[in-house]
Amino acid sequence: MDRSLYYTIYVLYRSLYRTILMEKLRYVLSEWFEGELPELVPRELPLGWRNTGLIVTLAGVRRGGKTYLLYQMIGHLREEEPRENIIYVNFEDDRLYPIEGNEVSELLDTFLRNFSYEANRPLYLFLDEVQNIPNWEATVRRLHDRNRNLRMFLTGSSSKLLSSEIASSLRGRTLSHIVYPLSFKEFLRFKGFELGEVDGLPYSPRRNELIRLFNEYLEFGGFPQVVLEEQKAEILREYYRAIFYRDIVERYEVRNVRLFENFLKLLVQNMGDRFSYGKVQRFLRSIGFPVSKNTLMEYMGMAKSAFMCDEVPIFSRSVKDQMQYPRKVYIIDNGLRNAVCFRSSRDIGKLLENVVFWELRRRSKEVYYWTSRNGYEVDFVVWSGGRVEALYQVCYELHDERTRKREMRASVRAMEEFGLGEATVLTYDQFGGEEVGGRRIRFLPVWFWSLSEAPQGAS
Image (cartoon, rainbow, N blue to C red; front, side, top):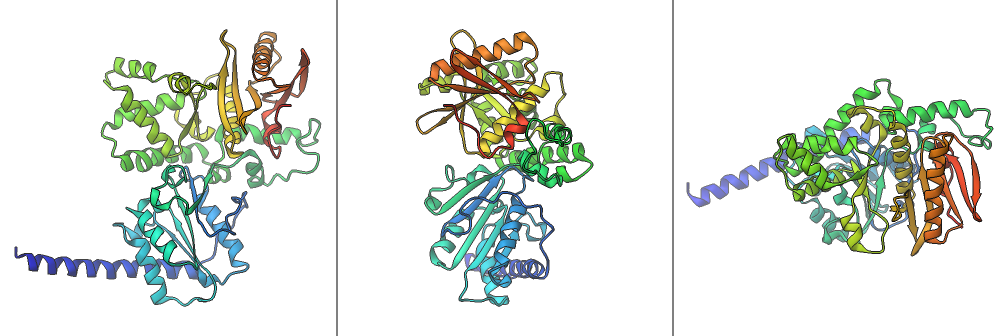
């Protein structure tokens, strides 16, 4: 074919594609401006989201509540800003497919050509699941740098939207937040349980109702839709499949899907345990999957990138030790974990530990686990400001004398190691405390601790 003819056909194709895309965008925008926001249960909004000239990014696990946080932000803005100056588009809307990479740029052009707005007021652009657009970072940077009156808000189910991993072209231009499934406090709000001044205290008159709701939270987790629906297990299994295929297998083009599926099942099943790549490698090889440690480490990176899990390293001032020792793995939500693996009698301890870990993450804590030379272990060491701030041990209950001694000894050894005067043992539903050698160990239920404004540091 003659090159000039080829070029002419290409130009015509691009022109037709642009016309079709702009018509799709015009329809989606018209629908947005004519519609109303859904009814919302308010969540905790990220600090500083409104009074910033930076691009605000919300990243987190699929179905964790990012879209509804955007709606909540939009609701606040509509109280003071013109409705027509607030634009929202979800790039998982199948009407916009196939997505090729220029959708964000064409979105703004389509809006300016077809809709009126108040030019003397800021223009707010909310882009949901923006990671679906190839090379979105370049367009977002260009629009941000050239339009000082434009405020941009992005969400995505990929850690690539976080400031620590975001493309270098956007560094210094973003304010990143992680959106987690509901905390227990938010869960209670979704359930219509209003915390009064005395609720959460040891002798609250509504303690039994509080614990009943905590049991539900332990089993089914905090995905917002799951909390409000009846068919919880079925929805959670669908979430798992969506994260598995759309956010990992398709995005990273995983070739050996069966191998990855088995790896992920082992990961989920061993939540809260030390995760050894060597042991996992040997097990997978024994069932017919020859795999390298490097591949398994890549798989772990993929799962973390989709916010399905996170790792906790051993506490050590040696980077070499942190790299060599096994890490403990926690799954983003108890419900997601329970929906895809068998339960056992020791699960409740793991579920409590998982709740504590993610609550510490919500509070932006840097977390490690600790072991002594003679085998004592503390589940969570909180590091802040160049020192150990707090120690948390998690177990189901302390009525058994052997369990009590084990947890107490571990806590005392850790307090001695770090020069602390206090540690906390978090249980299912036990209050109390003891003093050992001038050091205090508090016993608190996980549900009570998680409702406090901030974890109490050791003195």
